[in-house]
Length: 311
Image 1: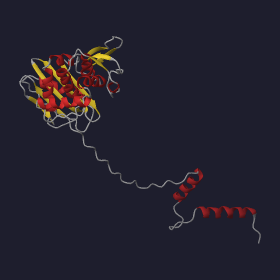
Image 2: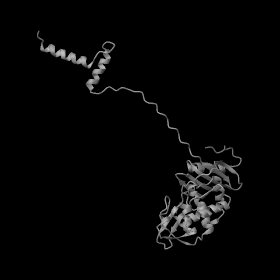
Image 3: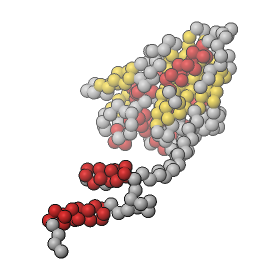
Image 4: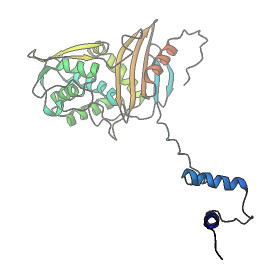
């Protein structure tokens, strides 16, 4: 029996179709299913099979480090607001308040100081002093308090005590002498170290002690200072790191600080409307806004209906 060429071609097509689309368990499947399969083959794209997504566990939020806050009325001695004020915390460059006290009490501000290689190599904020440069101790004190310059700080403390370790011993002895029992120093400029800490309460007490010294109080209210080497060959401009100074009425100092471990820190003294306030912030979130809100809260009239400061 002979088979025509057309019939053979049709059989081959049908056979191929049967191989491509085998019948399913429910007969041949629906017409729509076959149409979809033909579309996928004609487009050359493989079928996409959705699989259920694995459930992802949400990461637990990290605990937020505490803030240390103390707001004090210096005329009445009343504590207007406090939060974790007795908790030891890293103070960053607020450390330099104690360094300045020791320099003022044990050094001679008219001395000439030669910058060492170690001082010139200080990290973070600095004036970029060069080894061998000679500057007045008074100028170095201004640079460390106004600009928070670590190279100026190290040069000054090395001159007063011979080396930083000896100077730190003097800082710890002074802390005990003025009754700071929850304060301990491991360096002179405020770098993060495991046994280097302050409480907001004791920083407030230290600041009151420092502000009673005329030279210290005069320096920390300056927005900038011109620092010159003794030979007049090099001039540096030390600008304050305190944004409140010169922008918020009544602010007369005192010091800022920042390290990764300590967060953003601030001590401010404000004299306005017959009031004097002292504010200490450690590890502050939104440092400048928080400071302004607390200061305005402390300056409110006694008969004000304003509610207590809230976070």
